Amino acid sequence: MSFLECRSISKSYDGKHALKDVTFEIEGGDLLSVVGPSGSGKTTLLRIIDGLEKADSGEVLLKGKKISGEPFLHRKMIGMVFQNPVLFNTTVFNNIAYSLKFRGEEGETIKKKVEEMLKLLRLHDLRGRNALTLSGGEAQRVALARALVYDPDLLLLDEPTANLDPYNVSIIEEVLQRSNREQGTTVIVITHNIFQAKRLAKNVAFLLEGELVEFSDSAAFFASPRDSKTLSFIRGEMVY
Amino acid sequence: MDGFEVIAEGFARALQILLSGDQGILEITLLSLRVSLAATLLGAAFGIPIGFLVARKDFRGRSVVTTVINTLMGLPPVVVGLVVYLFLSVSGPLGFLRLLYTPEAMIIAQMILTFPVVCGITISSVLSLNPKLKETLVSLSAPPSWEARVLLNESKLGLITAIIAAFGAAISEVGAIMMVGGNLLGYTRALTTAIMLYTNMGEFATAIALGIILLLIAFGVNLFLTYLQMRSRVRRTT
Image 1: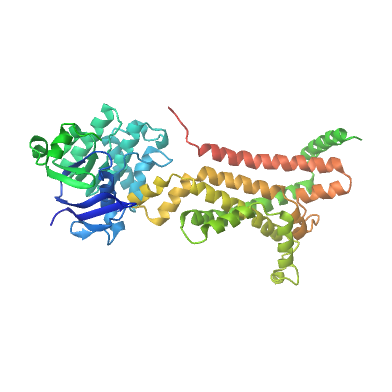
Image 2: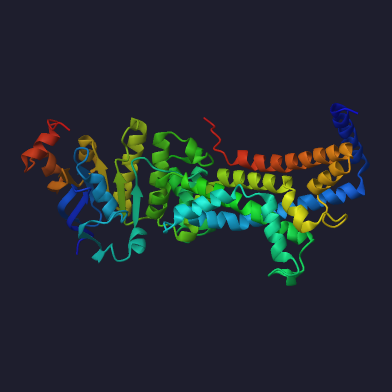
């Protein structure tokens, strides 16, 4: 049984296909990069896996269970980081603590886990700051901290480092890799940046116009892609 | 005596009242505060949750409900007073409660005025929140109780504005409490009804003095609420 299975996922908006019959599966502990040009359906795929949107057809199974059955319970196992995170109008500490409070955690446990996240994402100095006053990179680190603090089985990230400076990119990438390697968190990260995919991923999926063109391990994907469209995308020849 | 002299005398009289601590005026002032604060708190207790539900729940007729609430924000106090009077009068459906001409009747009448103000501004505040907030809460698996708590916290600037507006409507109105309270000395006489009485009696200086006291009270309460409002703003430290 695979950790995550997407079976024939299709989704349209106003008659326009966002995803067409997308099928793939990943094992627990994988770090999958989903690459593809804008409008290729990457974000839609992630939102369907997170249960934020329903597929028109097909199904998503997490540890063998359909997510459509109990989206609330299913989502408790998933952490999601959006491209432009929305933080709450309170301190950085409270923003991270909310995720634990939502899960019924209390007092000392919250404090301990939040402190760990503040340290991991180098947010210590910002713990008392209102989260709405943070820079883009700091806000994205808080968003990652609040998704990781409850130790999700699956972490989904939608272009988490888009428009960030190298300092913030390096922290986020380092934390993702540590979490994947040390905690065994399965990670799916959407990125435009093929260099980032190369640095991070164990497997890479290439989406184009809603179709899954290629899915293979990272080394093979970049060294010897099977599809000419993948090669064109990797070489930067694809105009989009 | 011309108008300016009356106003000047009014200021002098107000100062005299404030310094002398006139027992009668103190009672009137405390009653005004008690009635208006209670009406505001009750209006908020009903208006905030109902406004939140109207803003969050997608149900048939939501826009009609919102339009009705918005219309009621401009409810004439005299009309409210009349309706409450008819309900509480001896022959009215709630006459058995014997509340007419009591401070409780005044609170009920003012609560009917404050409720739509709080409710309407709450709807508007919650509707104007970033729609992605809700999605973020869903993604973080926030249970419904937490979802409401977080969203209300995000709307707190608007909610405090609602309470300020409601208190302003309550403390300044005269028509409703005059009709259901009866302006009974030592029992239901409030600052606004007393101002009206003294004006009718031609004691303009005392009326102006009471008006100044009314303004000072409104200023004091709003100072506190505005302090809370300012605190809830995002303070940019960089």
